[in-house]
Each structure stands twice: as structure tokens, then as C-alpha cells.
Length: 433
Image 1 (cartoon, rainbow, N blue to C red):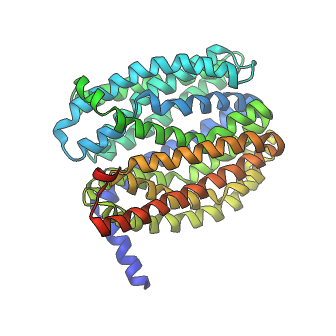
Image 2 (image 1 turned 45 degrees about the horizontal axis):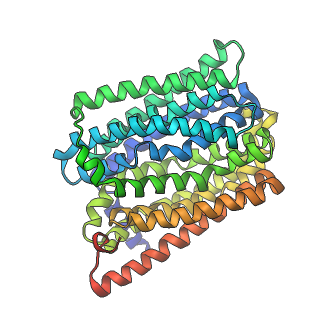
Image 3 (image 1 turned 90 degrees about the vertical axis):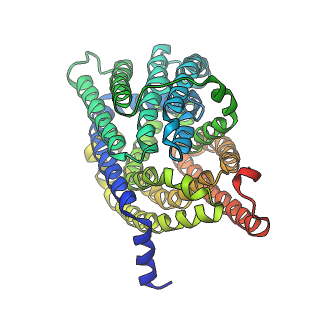
């Protein structure tokens, strides 16, 4: 393909609304991540590698359960409201209802699970603060952001992201200058308070601008399967991405978990532009997907070209910037240099499977996406248990990269199969999922 055709692809992909939404999300995510990096440095230095590792171990354990706290209602909101704006109030109400009910139940489950999987040095109260924050409060905040996303008003979503970064930074500064002991438990309390403040503010804003929630219990029951697909998909994503942190806390040491978590955070920063593009384009995938998997993949390929070009630059940037980390984070994190350089490949791999996954979802093949993610997550979890105790954070990184490669192969393999099937029998996701 000629360079001119590549430029034509880029131009058609980045239409006016998509470009504006992407830029708003990039601005919002960029400022939030900048603020997160500041509070990350404060927390990492204040708690030390061991304390930070313990906290991240709890966060990761809770994160595996987080998607089930709303059972995919936020994604169902985007899918349905992006096609019919009149459905917003009932899907918003259903999402909040499921978050409240399942969030409380999952908090209890997180406490029980934590007693088995986390070290005894982590108190139950820390698990409670983090669980309520992430399983209920943060999910409400996410649903509010998804509400604006469904209306393609990503300026508001971006502003919520920025404010979340500001509030979290305020919490980190409170830990540094106000807290008495600079302990993990004190940060867990501040973590809960900052999330709660943002959730209440975001909820009030959505009700004022878009409308109040209405509960439609019949749809809650009717759409449980579709919502479960989204929940399983998201939870599997957390397992293959982050379970290594919890395994490191349990079977290696909190310090090794802290090193791995710090390196992961640095890589996440470089993924911000890709996440912004995904957020801006997500509702469009459902619009394109109405015409089948081929239309959805055609749209994904246009975005993939942009993402891969950026990822190649990010790979080089991560490798070159890594040596300055001990100077920023402290000598506790000297091994994070090598860890970041090992993980520099990850943005490229994630670009390859992120848009393939959204193409499947947009065309109605969330079931296939979830099945692939569950298989990869289960395999990655087993590999972490077998490899991490022997090779520590290096083993965790290798297993994480294996997971990304498997997702690339799985998604693009099933896309090829579905496209062939669509060409032969004209079947769309609504019939084959």
C-alpha cells in the first residue's frame, strides 16, 4: 500500500467527531496520568517498595472482582444508548442498581478471598476500604463517564478523569503531610475517601445534565447474559494483566511486587493515547458492527494503523527513559529499570489485540471475545503460579507478554473465521454469538 493510501486511511479514520473526542480523552487521560504519576511517586516513596507492593496486592485482588460489581451494565448502557438515546434513564438506573447490590456482596467475598490469598500482614480493614472504593464508588464514577461516552460527549468523560487525578493527588499529599504514620492503612482510607467524593460529584453531574436513573428490573433479568459476557471479559483482562502482582505478594515478596507494579504503572502511562483512542471510538464500533464483522474490522484496521505507529515510538521511549527511575522513585526501585525495559514491547502487543477485541464486541461477538479472554486468563494464572515463585518479577513479565501474544492470536484467528463465515452464509453476530 502506498504512503498516500496510508494517509487517506488515517484521514478517514480520524473524522471530526472522533478526532475531537480522541483529543479530549487524550487531554483528560494525559492530565490524569500526569497527576497519577505525581501521586504514584509520592505513594511509592512514602510507603516504600514493600508497603506499595502490599497495597497493590490488595488492589489487584479486588480488581479481578470489580467487573462483576455492575455485571457489564456500563457497557450495555453504551451499546444501547449509542443507538437510541431515549433508553438512557433506564440503562443508567439498571447500572447503578446492579453496582450497589453486587458491589456489597462482592465486598464480603473480597474479604474472604483476601484471607486466603494475601499475607497475614494485610489487615481486613485495608481490604474493606479498597473493596468498597473500587467495587462500588469507582464503578459509579465509571458508569457516569460511560453515560457521556454513550452520547459521544467525551469532553465530560475527560473532565471527570482529570478531576479524579486531582482528588487522588490531594489524597497522596494528605498522606505525606497530614497522616501520622504513613501506613498502608492510612492510604487505604484516603483512597476510599477520594474515590467517594468523585463518585458523588459525578453522579450529581450526570443526573443534572442527562437525567435521573429509572429502574427497569425486567431488563436487568433479561440482559443478564449479555452483561455477564462483558463482566467475564473485563475480569479476565485483569487476571492476565495484573494477577502477577498478587502472586508476587503471596509467593515472593512485597518488594518484588512493588518493583513489578511500578514498572507496570510506567508502561500504563505510555498506553494513555491508545486508551483515549479506544474510548473515543468505542460507541462507533457498535454503529459499524450493525453491518457485520467485516465492517467492524474495517473500522478497527483504520485505528490500528495509528496505534501501531505510536506504539513503536513508545517502545523506544520506554527503553531510553527507564534508567532515570531510581532517581525519581528511590533506590528501592533500582530493579524497575530492567523491568520497564523488558516490558517496553507490551504497548505494541496490546495495540494488536485491543482493537481486534472491540471489533468483535461491536459486531455482537462479545461471547467469542469473552471465551478467548477466559482461556488466556486461566492459562496465564496457572503459568504465574508455576513460574513466579522461581523467577520472581522476571517470570511475571514473561508470562504477561505470553498472555498478550495469545490474545493477539486468538482474536485475529476468530475474526478470520467469522469473516469467512459471514462471506459464505451472511451471518452476523446476532445469529452466531
